[in-house]
Image (tube, rainbow, N blue to C red):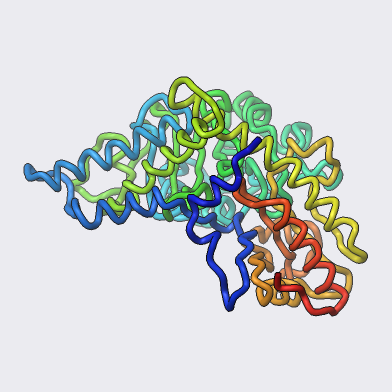
Length: 420
C-alpha cells in the first residue's frame, strides 16, 4: 500500500484551507508543493551559513560544500557520470537560452535545427531566436494526433545532412504523452545531429537515466519535482567541454563553473540536495533498500504504481462528462505512455470559466495555453482560451480526483460547484 497519508503529512500546504475550504492542489504541472524537509534545508542555510564561496572562514567553506553536494546529488538523481555534467541556474528556459549561444556558436547559415510541435515554449523560443541571429533553418516535426507521440518515422522524414540539432520533448505539459527519447536520439545521432531533451514534465513522475537515453543535453526544473525554483541542465562532459562558454573573464574555465553565470542561490542549492534526499526517503518509506540510486528508483516506481490507476480514474471521470474533450492518451492500457497531466476543453463553457469555478471551490487547476503554445496552435485550440489542465502528483488522492470530476461536471452544467 502506498503511504499517501503519511506522505501528505510531509507537505504543510496540503493541510491548509482557503476560506474554510480545503485545498486540492492539482496545479502540479506548473509547480509542485514542497515538503517540510526542503523548506527546512533552505531556512537552515539562510539562518546559519549565509555566505559567498571561496573564503577560508566557516560559513564560506560550508557554502562550498553545499554547492558541491547539490551538483553531486543531482548527478546521482539523473544518472550522470559526474557532477561536472550538471549546470544549475535560474530556470530551464534561462539555461536553454544561455546554452543555445554556445551550442549553436559554430553552426553555419543554412544549418538546420529540428523542433517538435509538442514542445513547451522553453524548448522552442531559444532555438527560434538563435536561428534568426545566425541564419539557421528551423524544421518542424509533428506529433501524431492519434498516438499523441513523436513517431520515429516522422522524425526520420525531416532529418537531413544539414541537421545539427534536434530538440525533443520527453513528456508534454499539455497532452502528458511520453516520447521514446532513446529511439528518437538514435535516429538523430545516425544523421549526425545532437539531441537536446526537455524532461521538465517527466522528472516529477519517472526516473531519468541520461546515460541510458543517450541524448547530449537534458533539462529539468526542480520546482516541478517537489524542490526549490531552480533549473537544471545536464550535458555529456565531453560535449560541454567542447563548447565555447559565454562568461566573465574571471570565471573559471572548469565545468560546470564556466556555464553558471553569477553568484548561485546557495540557499536553493541546499534545498535541492534536500529534494534528492526526499526521494531517497520516499524509497525507504515504501520498503526499498540498497544504494541511494536504488532508493530513488524505488520511489519513482512506487509513485507510478500509485499515480497510474489514479490517472485512469481521472481520465474516465472527465471523459464521461458531456461536452468534454481530452487532449491526450485516454486508453487505460497506455497509461504508462503518459504522465498524469490531463488537458480538457468543453464544447460550450470556456476554460477560464471552469477554472474560476473550481478555484472558488478550493480546487487549483490551470487554464490557458500554459506555454504549450505550439501544440495549442497545432491542435487548432484558440490560443487566447487554451485548455483546463489538471495535473496529479503522488500526494493527491482518489477523493480529490472524485472532487475535481464532480466540480468540472457542475461547472460545465452551470451549477454551483460543491466546496467540500
